[in-house]
Image (tube, rainbow, N blue to C red; front, side, top):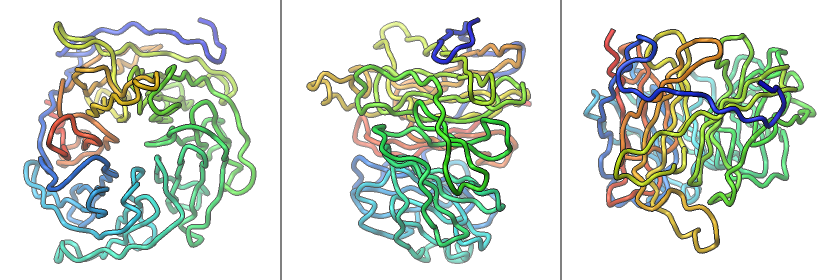
Length: 410
C-alpha cells in the first residue's frame, strides 16, 4: 500500500445481520422519546445527552427554532420520557451546535446552545420544571463539543462555525481563544474532532483538510497541518463533515474517522495516522448496499459515533443518514441532501480487531426515523452503548426525538 496523503484505499467488507468473526451483533430496539414535538418545524439543536437530574441515568436536551425554546427530557424508563421547558431565547432561531458541559464547575451538567448556555439549577430531581437560568455568550456555530483544551482538568467549549474555529475557557469567564479563521466550510469538528494526533499528550483539533497542533495549553499559535479530506463534488452546502479522532487499529496512535454530511453522496473514511500527523493513509469504507426496489446512493451522514457496540474490545463505527427531503439545491446544480426517494439508514461498521481491521456492515434500520447529530451513551444502564438521535427536517409530519436501545445478548 502506498503511504501518501490523499491515497484512498477501499477496504473489503462483509454485509451480514448475524455475527462478525464469530462475535454476536446486537439487535436494536426503537423507542420514541417525543414522537411528535407539538407545533414543531425544521431546525433542532442537540441532542445533548447527560444526567441532568442526578438520578444516575441519562436524560436528553434539545432546542427548537420555531418555539425559540430549549427542553430537557427526563428519562423515567426506556419508553417514558417527560418533557420539561428549560427556557427560551432569540438565539434559538438559528441554533444547531449543542453540547452538555459543566460550565460553572458546580457538579451539575449544563447545556451550551448557539449563543446561550443554560445553568442547571441542581434541584431537578425534586423540582423538574424549575426554569434554568440562561446566559448569552459568544460561542456558537454549526459544531460544538466539550473538551479540556488547556489540560487543567476542567472541560472547555470548542466551536466551529465553518469560518472560525475557537475554544472558550470555562476557567476564565469563557474567554475566546481563536485557533484559526477564514475558512469556507459548513462544519467539520463535531462530535469529537479533537484528540492527540502528534503524540505530545494534548488535544489537537481538526476541520476538513487541516489539523491544528495544540501549543500545549491552548494559548498561542496552533500550527496548521494538512490531512487528506476528500470532499463531495458540488455538495449541497459545500465542505462539511462529522469527525472523530480515535485509535481505530489499536496501534497506540490516534487516527481520524469522518463522514461527509449536509449533502447527498456522503461516504465514510478512516484516515490512518502514519507519522505523528505528518503522513496519512485514507481508507474509504464501503457504502451500505441498497435493497432491491430501493433508491440507490447515499444521503447525508450527519451522525457519527465510535464505540465498542458489541463489546468485543474493538472500536466500531456508527453513521446515520438524515431524514431531510430537501432537493431545492438541485436547481443550482448541487447535490440534493439525499437522492429522491432514498430510504435513510442507520449503519454500524463492526471492527473485527484484525491487522488491519476488517469491518462487517450492519444496518440498524431502513427508512424513517432518520438520524441527525446522534449521541452515544449507556442510556439504560445495562453496560452497553445506546444511541439517542433526532430529526432536523422531517420527511413527513412528525418531528421526533428517538432512543435506540442496544439489545446485546451476553
